[in-house]
Image (cartoon, rainbow, N blue to C red; front, side, top):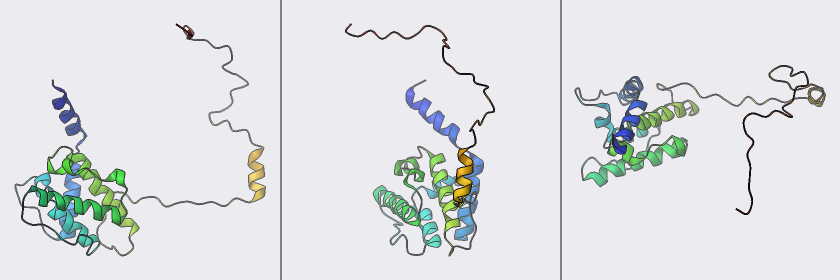
Length: 184
């Protein structure tokens, strides 16, 4: 098997069709329109127009111009505009797919993960009252301890896995020792 085929197989194995379906249903709910019947999820979002419309529903005016005609560079510009709006909305760079992942359908699983990251980010925007996608992100649980509590913690022995009853690894030797020869 060639390397390229192995890479494609590995990327295809990462893809979860139930997540794709969830993401598609979420997009359809927000936009108020169903994807064309018989067309694959990745084919509908491939040119970026649907994704730009999605961003404009979540954050009005976040994508100023959506290209509906033109060559592949205009369609890829839609994807880049979506990605820029996504980052401005608060998604981390590590959650954003590469343009070729969608345009060339190289890693649709990563595209779906990006849509889920966007869905999680909607929880952090109080102005958004619509449907959410994915689990709600946790909030910071800041705790304030008194000086007395901090001092009491210093007297405790931290044995997370229980007591080792004084056992150490001193003198323990497994296998041959490593020899480092200098000047050879």
